[in-house]
Amino acid sequence: MTTTFADLPLRALTIEALNAHGFMAPFAIQEMVLPIALSDGDVIGQAKTGTGKTLAFGIPLIERVIAPQDSEWAEFPNKGLPQALVVVPTRELCVQVAKDIQELAQSRGIRVIAVYGGRAFEPQIEQLQSGVEIVVGTPGRLLDLYRQGQVKLSKVARLVLDEADEMLDLGFLPDVEKIFTSTPERKQTMLFSATMPGDIIALARRFMNQPVHIRTQDNDDESAVVSRVEQHVLRAHALDKIEMLGRILQAEGRGPTMVFCRTKRTCQKTADDLLERGFKAAAIHGDLGQSAREKALSDFKAGKSDVLVATDVAARGIDIDGITHVINYQCPEDDKTYVHRIGRTARAGAHGIGVTFVDWDDMARWSMINQSLKLGLAEPIETYSSSEHLYTSMKIPVGSQGRLKASKPLDEPLRAKTTKRPEKSAPKKAAPARMKTERTRTRNKKFKTEDA
Image 1: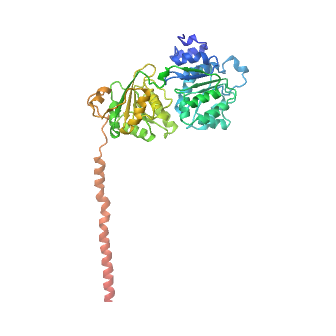
Image 2 (image 1 turned 45 degrees about the vertical axis):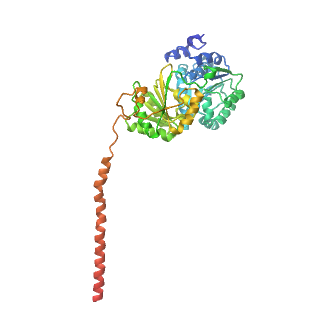
Image 3 (image 1 turned 90 degrees about the horizontal axis):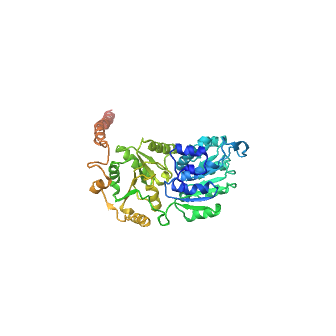
């Protein structure tokens, strides 16, 4: 039974880097995957979200890469070409995975690059041309660079698919298959997924060599939520949701909070409403530019904002410790989405609170989620912002309102408009006088003509 990373056959520099970042002992998924992955075996890893999958595949990649500082580098024939490739579904996850691997790899001079859309091609091309050992990328940008001849995949020996089920949900299956066929010298393939739908199994059978299927959850608990999450389901009225949200955000012990919405429009409007009410909120969704998304995420991580309002697609791959509350402002589409959302809290052994608002129109959808996950929450409690049980169950201080600052008064602009009306209408009153003058002149001219 492995107790620390030092018990594994790892390089001394890798162990030092792990210890320097606070990683002394492996998590369950890491402990089960690492012995197989370090012996070059193909792996299918299945685990709940937030269980440390990145290091489970990142450590073997770092161990097997030939780095510029290694003694083998002088005779290595593929200098500067990617030796390992990690494919992820979203930009945020791409940045996060590349950062985690880079932190452990930099002591050996291993060059890691993140390639994803929403950014200019030129900096990524320049870095690829200067030489890299590990590439982390999203399918679309990877194939764009591959077709341009800027990223060489022919010498990739190790390929990882992370969040494979989400990748297929987003329609990336043809791109993933193209990436597989573009890596003919692949010696090892690792696939990580929270669920195992039929398409994933078919993909594994086609491209993997006798993979070992590792799962760290019970067979009858595949979609179970993290047990430490304290779950509340409230039947809420659409017009009262923002007021309820504002009061929940003042609950005792409330720290960094994620608020999930189904649509981009609702996501942005909710963030704007919270800002107007005095909360430090930021939005992250598909309509925002990449720089705006990265700034919102970095501000949230740095504590400049403590409420991140996100859509499901944009939030995939966001791995932030310390989130105390997850609030489903709009009911999730299905049980997988629900598990993904509330899995953002109660990470690394911490306690977390999940709150779901269910509209009257969403009762059927929630019933299916509850039945699938066996939550025992079939009848959401009818709740309003003034309900006493909302204050007691969420530990909201008595007297709290849904805003931290007063709303802007509406009567001042109205008074301003009223004072300007006489000025605008003054020229119009002069018009009849001019018309009368013209008629008088015409009449006088007519009389003069008749007199003549």
